[in-house]
Length: 143
Ligand SMILES: Cc1cc2nc3c(=O)[nH]c(=O)nc-3n(C[C@H](O)[C@H](O)[C@H](O)COP(=O)(O)O)c2cc1C
Image 1 (tube, rainbow, N blue to C red):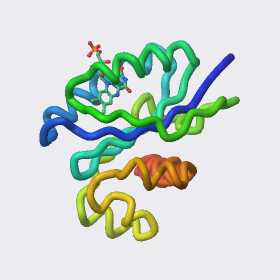
Image 2: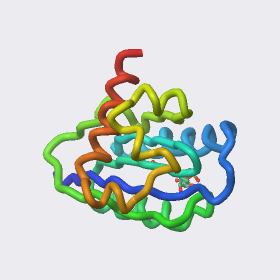
Image 3: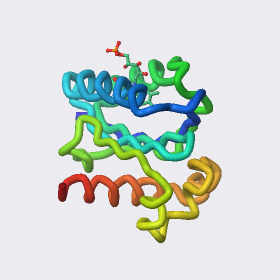
Image 4: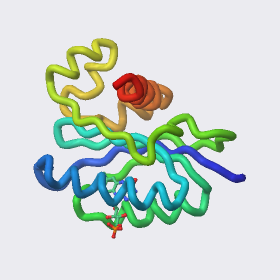
C-alpha cells in the first residue's frame, strides 16, 4: 500500500449555502467510500480546509478533479505525507461547518479562522491544520 495524506485550503467561489455543501458532501462520501479514501472537510467563513487520505494515484486523481471544481478556487496544499494507516478511518468524509460560536469553543484555534482559513498561517505551522481537523473529528466520533 502506498498511501498519502493531503491537507489543503481553498476559498469558496460564492457564498456556500447548506444545500450546496450537502451536494458536495454527498458526492464526496459516495465516491470516497468506493475509492477507500477517508478524510474530513471543514467550512468556515468562505474557506475550506480538507484532509484526504488514500492510495497515492487515487488521491492525485481526486486532486485534479478538485482543482477543476468551480465551487472553490485557490487550492493550496499545506501537507503531503506518506502514511502507513488512515488517521480519519471512521470517515469517508467527515464534515463540520464552523460558525462563530464554534470558533469560540475551539479557543486555541480561533485565530486561524477569524477570516476564513489563511493558507499562509497554516504553511508556517503545517501540523496545526491537522490538529484542528483531528480535534473536530474527535468531536464527531463522540456524537
Ligand atoms: C471543497 C470541496 C471538497 C470536495 N471533496 C470531495 C471529496 O472528498 N471526494 C469527491 O469525490 N469529491 C469531492 N468534491 C467534489 C468534486 O470536486 C467533484 O465535483 C465530484 O467528485 C464529482 O463526482 P460526482 O460526479 O460523482 O458528483 C469536493 C468539492 C469541493 C468544492
